[in-house]
Length: 245
Image 1 (cartoon, one colour):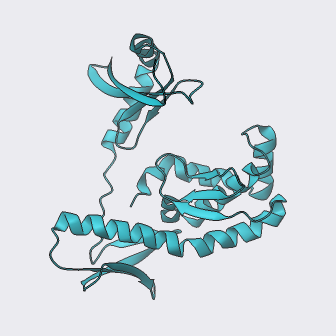
Image 2 (cartoon, rainbow, N blue to C red):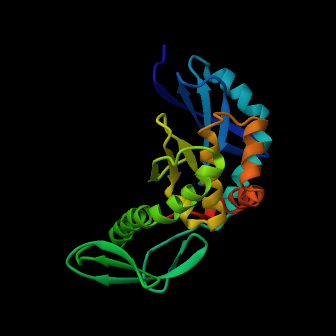
C-alpha cells in the first residue's frame, strides 16, 4: 500500500523514439493526467494503487500526443540567462538593461530603469549566475507587489470581493492560485510576461474567490471583467515557456 506520494519510472515508444516518463502516485489524485514539461520531461499523475502495467496501457493511448509535445519542447531554443552586462530582463512587457558589478555584499536593485546586480569576488561563473538569479527573483517579488496590488485594487470592487492578501512566489506548475483564507498567490514568472498576462492572472484568481470552479458562470464573470482575457491566454499558451528566470 502506497501513502502520500511515490514515484515510478516507465517508458513509451512512438515513431521509433523511446520516451521515458515518471509516474507520480498521490493519495490526493482522483483521476490520471499526463504533463509534458518545458524541459521535455514527461510526468504521469496517478491515483494510488494503479499498477504500472495499467499506467503503461493508458500512456500508450496518448503516445502520439506525448511524442508531439516532446518534439515541440525539444526543438525550442533554450532561454539561458547569465545576468551580466548587456543582457536585458523583461518586467511586465518592457525590457530593462542589466548592470552587474563587484562589491562587498550580494544584492540586486532596480533603479532608474536598470537592474543593478552586485556580487562579491571569489565565486565561479556558474555560482555567480545562480546567486544573481536568486537575487533577481527576490527583487521581482519585491517590485512586483505594487503593480499587482494596483490591479487588485482596480478589479476587486468590480468583482464584488474584498481585496485579497497578495503573495508572489515561484511556482512550478500554476500561474496563480487562491489560498484557503481568500488570499491569492501569483507566480513570480508572471512578472516576466506582458502586463495583460498579469492582469488576467489576477482577474482569474479574484473570480475564483466567488466561483471555486471553472464552469460557465466562472468564465462569464472573467469575460465580463476582462473582455480581452483570451489574448492573455494565447500569450501564455504560445510564449509561457519563455517566461523563466
